[in-house]
Length: 148
Image: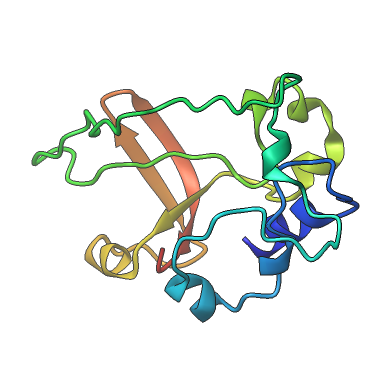
């Protein structure tokens, strides 16, 4: 999060709407305890002016969304739900970022982050390999034990 926050403010002279650069120095504990904030949270004196809006007509476009529950379920054969996600440098489904070698160097191999209690329950050592299977397929990934 700290790196993401710092990058949002890097060379941002108020031209980019997203700027949470002032949060770049938060400790993990402060981040965990942080109440929701409205951005921009900028270090720049030229903070982006929300009154300008994002579009040429100066108006904002708000799109309401309704959270949807996961369709995944657990059972005796699949006791855990795998929440797959992207690493820091993967976005655009890698259609753009996948061609940038520097962005592919952040994490060298697939990893599975496992909660400490699940690592104990399934005897998964840190930095070991885990075979992960679901109704959709099978993969092997390096284990990282993480609180969250």
